[in-house]
Length: 330
Ligand code: CP
Image (cartoon, rainbow, N blue to C red):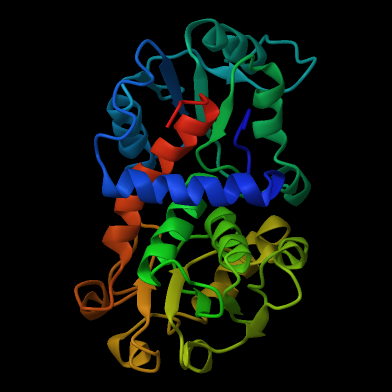
């Protein structure tokens, strides 16, 4: 694996090997210890993070590698992005040069670059991440881009595999939209959908009208995915309830109308009553999550909650990803 942009670009063999490796890291915290000694990892966060940032730092440390977190705009120069731009404005450094320079010091670069939510074409094409990847001369790991969050996806897949003793195929996975006061990107739901489908799960996506995921991503997930317009009926018999908020496609051309439409669905919240419709289903969320808005305390603090184990798997998944990127002999 040279870069990790998204799993749909990787073979089934690599995907499966990474799930198994994440589970080996979950079982043995000394696995791979110091095998990456002398290597270094840059972590470039254009957007906020708690889990991805800290779990990547610890993943690198457990393998013996050094990591540096870089937050553009906080102690760095401002970056220009467009090719051929005349840099006579506020930005002092072009991302092309920054990626080239970081490639001189680091053995891999992780980049977080959220969706613009202003140009669907740019987001769908991963325009910013691809520009960075083109300029970098070392492996690039996607720490959540416009459309995909492969680190989260691997953690989710490995955690679900553990939950079902290695046999998640055929279990009912419900990806349910939930209300949120802000318009959020679709990287996590896209990746969760694709991961569950690739595990062979029986996938349902529940969302109100206007909040469907990009049909191109649904197509990638395959013809077995069911679509529901109601959270209640979708949750019936679920083995996994994966809640996430995301914006409707209107956000790209009519953001105020999207906000107004979203506000009509504040009842899309995962409650203990709703979880009783499941088959003792596990509640998953990538976090951060808004308590009392997306999901009730009774679910997050109750016996069906899996989100903390899911968060723990972020570390194991990223140890697996770094091991593959650096071809460590595990
Ligand atoms: N789930 C996730 O990526 O969390 P952070 O945004 O805190 O990194």
